[in-house]
Image 1 (cartoon, one colour):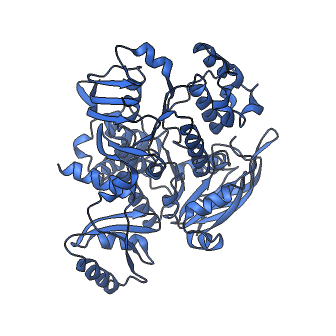
Image 2 (cartoon, each protein chain N blue to C red):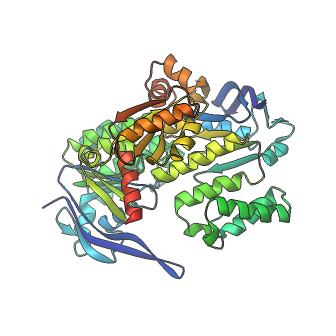
Amino acid sequence: MQAVEVNNIRKTFKAGKSVVTALHDISFGVDRGELFGLIGPDGAGKTTLFRILTTLMLAGSGTASVDGFDVVKDFKQIRKRVGYMPGRFSLYQDLTVQENLSFFATLFNTSIKENYDLIKDIYIQIEKFKKRKAGALSGGMKQKLALCCALIHKPSVLFLDEPTTGVDAVSRREFWELLHNLQKQTITILVSTPYMDEAGLCDRVALVQEGRILGIDTPEAITKQFDQVLWSARAENMFKLLTDLKAQQEVNSCFPFGQEHHVTFNGSEENARLVETRLNQLGHKSVRFEKINPGIEDCFMELMEQHKKS
Amino acid sequence: MKVISVRNLTKRFGSFTAVDNITFDIEQGEIFGFLGANGAGKTTAMRMLCGLSRPTSGEASVAGYDLYKNANRIKENIGYMSQKFSLYEDLTIRENIRFYGGIYGLSLSDIRSKTNLLVKKLKLEDSINSLVKSLPLGWKQKLALSVAMIHDPKIVFLDEPTGGVDPITRREFWTLIFEAADRGTTVFVTTHYMDEAEYCNRVAIMVDGQVEALDTTGVLKAKYAAKDMGEVFLQLARKAKRGDG
């Protein structure tokens, strides 16, 4: 039995006269102790899926179980076993840090003392503000308090909905270190994020877009599936390079990627050299093409385009 | 030509100095990246430059107008969009353009021609009478950027404009930024995506209310012996003392 099992889950919403499908019959499983990432932009269906799995919403069709319990029949069992940190800060703003924590501990028939080991590393970072009202905390501290509250009853499965959205690069790294420490305590963690670079920090990821799973595997296996030769391209004028590359018929795709552009070519590798020569003729300086290994974001975009065509 | 000029700009809230004596200039047509950890003072600084918050001390001129004397003229000459607030969800695309055009004092005939131009460029002709809330996030953000520039402002301020947007649309959005800068519009942008920092001509990194580093991406990477802007950012932001908790 897997920690989370999802079978053909479908969810539709009425929007005025039309019907929007948030989840298109998706299926997957998460193993015990796994750190599993749902990677995708806003509107991919990540929050809807989390709400169904935490028994806060009913699916239109399909079945799902968490920790062996059915999300419809056994919702009371599931609620005792899962921790859930929603994307929007949902603690009591007018209670203090400490009051919030003991409130959630009491709700779950436990005490802060009983499970203190689990939250210790996180709680000591906010302990000096324990008398402060939650509403008066900074973003980073709110996030840490919310994580403590989601953990205080020692859940077997933890759902974190976009915990790092809007968080700076330094704090994001620290947050992932916390998650890796938690994972050692044999908690299964499902985390959603729009940041593609966080995929590499998960054991396995599902790439999601518009209610569909585009791909699901370990990050390494996903990047191996990229079926074209990927090149990085640089020149002095990167904006002009982008426009000129896109105008070449041999160029299949071309996207800016930080300090370089990532390019794939139609046909054989000869075409890369052909285009390189042409760019030099167009007056580009210091043109440099290099074969590179694709990352998760390259794969995500390739899968998006494949999906659009099909 | 300098379109933003900031000298010793400071903002205090009680005993807390959110923005601490910052000084810089921004040239016309520049894409200027404004980075910093949460709580470093970016939003406060940006609010001052948009004429929304009065500085405690220091001087600044934006789009040729003094921050103290002509805050309202500044507002007429800049555009602003953020991930959190951009368009009215319960108005259609056409109504949003009409509304913002009106706010910025465009004539009805200008609004009409701008509307046509804009929906054509964004390929939104078929959805022009749809409510904005029915659009995918990526489309919304591209539309919001175009609407923020409907009055041809000298400067456009973008506060984390691409948060949560899919990777293809994120790049299309940046193409719109490149085009705007190419036309001479100055772009002042904050982001948490470190690859986007590379697209900026110059980048300022704020730490604890101060501008800790400011230069072209090339110079910054060389100075901090970093392979990319992400590493530069990490090196500097880790020095923060006041942090975000």
